[in-house]
Image: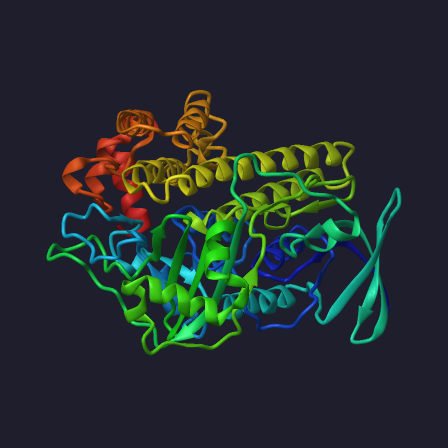
Length: 512
């Protein structure tokens, strides 16, 4: 088999399929290449408000109405009830002392709840990727994207005018030619291996591993106080934090729960994560709160161990190829940064294909895309690296987390107001004041030695987020529980160069 296309995309997860659909809408011929076969399990499952806003924008701008409904829980349930997902009202954190396990105290000092929506109808979601990715592939095929699954690529040859890919599909030799190739096959993906792109370090980021699976029969933890939380704590991305690592729980509406651990090499060695299920039982035995939740749980997928979680490609683009952000690098599942980084990359690549296809400046724009992608990755790495350094110091972990929530909620609101220029980069890392300030704060967080230093850092973080704080973050009266309230946005209107009427209209458009 030998075919020629404008664009070849390697990897048919939602990101590769979405970019394939956008390219088709822009008039390009596209082939989507998959090594395996759908449906299949993939790590990376929890969306965020910024993720869903980017998905909504892309599917609206490029006329993909069948997918726009997936940007909110309520519309998803009406349009695609057959596609499993989970309700994500926010981010829930619980801190554990593994040396002295104890019930959570009622003063909320060991928990953090940050709501992302005021009610279920406009809530975020966890994406059950087996169903979600399969839907995207089917929609891509409907638009005329050529889809080749069970295809193994073994060679790549680049010339002045095209790239030739060679391999086999179902044991039959295969040759594909394309003017442009995009790698959407994840870390250490096809182009990274075939072109020998090499790796580079994420500065000051610890070596980490992961172990995860899907389960049935997982219980719910519920609220640990008599107060009414801003949302049911389990209807969220649940993070159990402890010295050296953290565990995630994501509940889907098909009875399945995604759960796993990300841990430093030191802690991973203590539990011997490479042993899989036996290691998981050792972890549960050391965390009583989780042991009860998993008392009747059963894994429905083999345990998967990732011996090195973080990744950063030394090169991201060439003259006729590019890595999606999901293939260019990965930091950690903490705070669900992977999805927005990937969708920002799709947004940028789509604009290049739309406005600069086969122009003399195409390669130059690809280089700019590479710089943005790597800068976003480094911004996420600095944040999450500082959080790892304080997994055992929850009073500092909380304000550090608020740097993330302040930046992304400001960016989301700015975009919804039609002011994307206020928040061009992820975590506002290129902002002339906030970006450098965050770098200094993250560095200080990695070297705390005294309580006085920790207290001063916390105060400085709250001052840093104030010009971008549109969600009442850091208000001591809320005691680590942060609901979504309209008044917070109204009070923050001047920070967004908006009027109260602008905010009222925004709330109405969003279904608040």
